Image 1 (cartoon, rainbow, N blue to C red):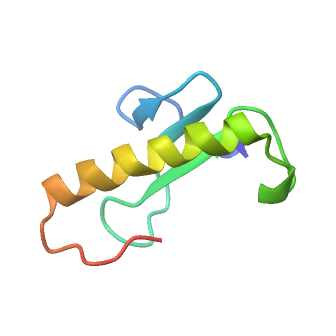
Image 2: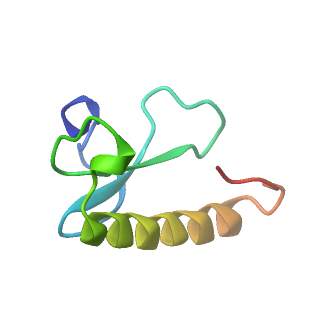
Length: 77
């Protein structure tokens, strides 16, 4: 949920109109990024098509950034 995501300066990797990519406050791995909608939803299947499209675009941006930052990263999920 967006309310639980730290949107302070330096935590946001990229922001869209309806979603945001942020660095995880409690990362599972270095460079861990979360992509979340700006509106509260209870499940991925509750997202609107435009939210899914924008979030997937942010995932691609985050993946590209992570790959540039650390070329040893081999997996994304």
